[in-house]
Image 1: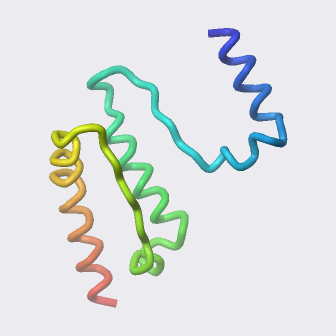
Image 2: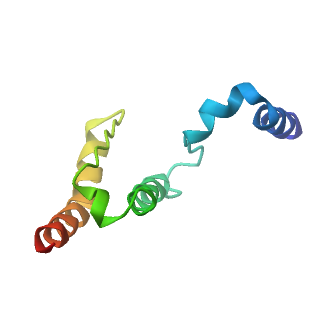
Length: 91
């Protein structure tokens, strides 16, 4: 763990690592809430780019390794997307 931490800190200081700072990765145990965190990060991103004003131009491509995860994302994100669409329609 110490070697990983030292390597990560060195990479963060390295100028060549600059373009990679806009990436996000999760390394968590099964059932620990990675999907929930990802959905929260999507909401945070929407807020960061301008919230509802930028929602019309928002394009997020979400890939998953299995069909069961596609169903989970659809089930969890559809109510949110519908609510955002209703708010946009009222503008």
